[in-house]
Image: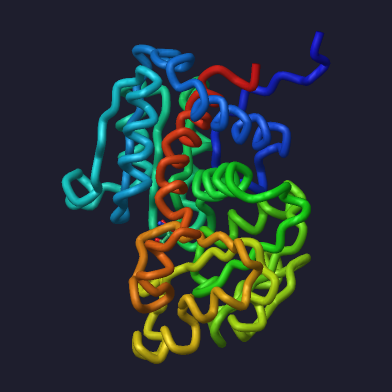
Length: 311
Ligand code: ASP
């Protein structure tokens, strides 16, 4: 008999507050879902998931919806632009209103850091919150799907050199990704950012930091490129797209500095010809569409774990 402790997590708010064993359960379950999707069809039959999005999204929102439908949940999508938010309703009032209609899972994306914490405090037992991205702080399902993709395509994590490059300062993908990679024991994490866009001290702790992409790439096994988060720059000056591409863009010539089979990732949306050349994004080493595909299995695993625990 397994002596593993069964956990029933209430919510997925961020990587840092989730026990590593729960994260590992979600990663393994996502693999099982990819390998044997029919085993999980209808495993959450009749439950209800609400997608509540206050920021634009293509991949994440659709991926939660498809994941939920594949598990047999019913889905309601709310875009803030079409809701009473336009009439001045607060996030808390909108959440309490939805909660009164008894959904099982509420997936929230919001532009403010930490927006879900007060909701978790008032959430009724049995209502599970999932963070689909809050401000520049956290994007836990992106971190999980990236690791699922890495473990599927690259060698053992503890032997990999992983580079994350671009606007690290405003990136919730970097914060959650770095936390998960460190927790799961990545061989070496390298962070590379243009001046002024570096990650903060907490994210950089335990990583090697570079201010030259050429140097960061030497010998790398995986490189994840990030776009500039224009919506969070608050007036900060950045180079024009051509200059940025020349200095910070991932081109085929730059990729040749990395390990011979170096894999390329990007969470999307991409700015082609800015942080990544089209030939690299569409090239044989790109895992970008694998990330999207794994996003569905990963979100299925997250929803299933919240509804059924780690049993
Ligand atoms: N889609 C990711 C996010 O929501 C990355 C990005 O927007 O640059 O954070």
